[in-house]
Image (cartoon, rainbow, N blue to C red; front, side, top):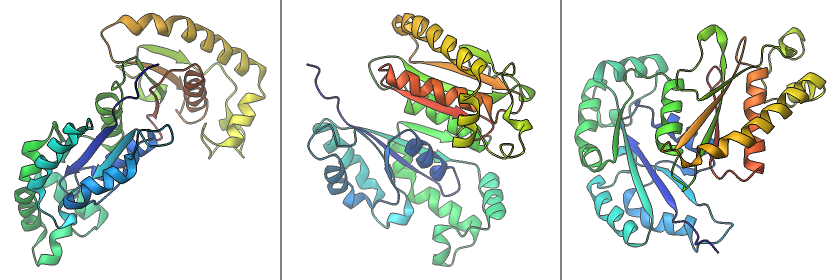
Length: 292
């Protein structure tokens, strides 16, 4: 019998407006147990309470947000991470940042208040002060992610492929949807064209929905050519994806494209991801480039 794998803990920290909320939402979508704004001094007790004894019904992957809102000594995180390692908990710290101009623009766009504005600081002053307060976390981080030139979609994909997949002992799978009008994903290992299938776009009741909605799934499930196409894809991937298990890569991207990246490609990505999980692949994710 295989031993239960060690829990995986991802600590998400960094500057306000740098993408921490996007990161936590991404990990949540990948079945991580997520919680935000945890004070450092409460972190050990919180993690023990969530992970507890290593039983099948306990979360195995946890993502926690820690930043200046916690009103605690952030320099203590280094000591806690060492204690976590002593208890066989793999604690990875991701630090998010962006340049001052980008942060100023993001706060202006969203009209959010900076967490340190209550100290009577202007927004530029608050950003400088937050950099000073979070410096211990930045030094301790496993990775520093600059989001100045990343949009939400690019950040989500970076997190999925570089930090959320590939932690297991086997090959991880990413099923991605895209719109041909915006180009084929350069990183795709397999690309399949769904434009040959019936398009729900032409049904007025389905046009505003996506391939993740029940009505669109039922429409496509009822099309014989869609069922034939999906079955052939399942057979092909069941045959050849295991052959890549001995390669040096940690994950494989299987991409599905349609005209708008909204219905058929999304449907196929979700369907093949469910199939892969049913086949026993332990680490499977989806990414919808035009929707996420």
